[in-house]
Amino acid sequence: MGDSQDKGHFSADIPPDAVEAALRSVERKARPGAAEGEGDGAPVEVEVTPGEAPADDAASLRAQVELSQALGRETQKKLEDVHDRWVRAVADLENYRKRAQKEREDVQKFGVERLVKDLLPVLDNLDRALAAAAVDDPLVEGVKLVRASFEQALARHGVKSFSAMGQPFDPARHEALLQVPSAEVAPGTVVLEHARGFTLHERLVRPAMVGVSSAPTKDAKEP
Image 1 (cartoon, rainbow, N blue to C red):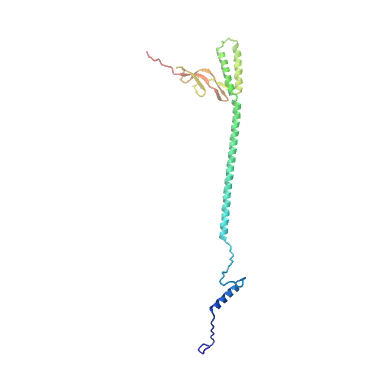
Image 2: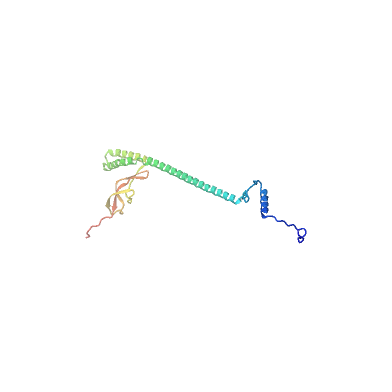
């Protein structure tokens, strides 16, 4: 030391390589489990434990709720479809039952309609026989009894006769066979009846065969 140096001042020259080596040695000792002789400058792997992520859990829970709601809506729709089909099936079955009941009743009521139509001419012939017979003919009373018995048998099955004489012509119940000019009654009035009409349980079986009045014709030349 020279005299020019301050008293108590210490100076030493340390090479830079020695300082870097000392720092690396300290870092290796500070890392637990560091292997001896690791190369200088080797990357240090740090294990990081992820913490809780509340935002991710909320998103997952919301997705599960939305999925459950979608499945619930789909199940509800299926149940509604099944219920609608069940209601329609019940309604169809009830309608079928009513139709079957009505058809059965119609068969019971109108099943003899064809037979009645075949028997009505027999009754017409009895009427014509009575109309053509002489008053003092001994068979008239017998024919009247037969005719009355016949008509009563038809009535027990719902067959009724009706007359159209003197009534306005009704195309729904009468069948016009001819027109009769007449000044005594209004045009369109039934003035002749060839055969009576018949109904079966209020259903028309045969219309009345009638002649309908018309306005009298005027002479082509006047005096």
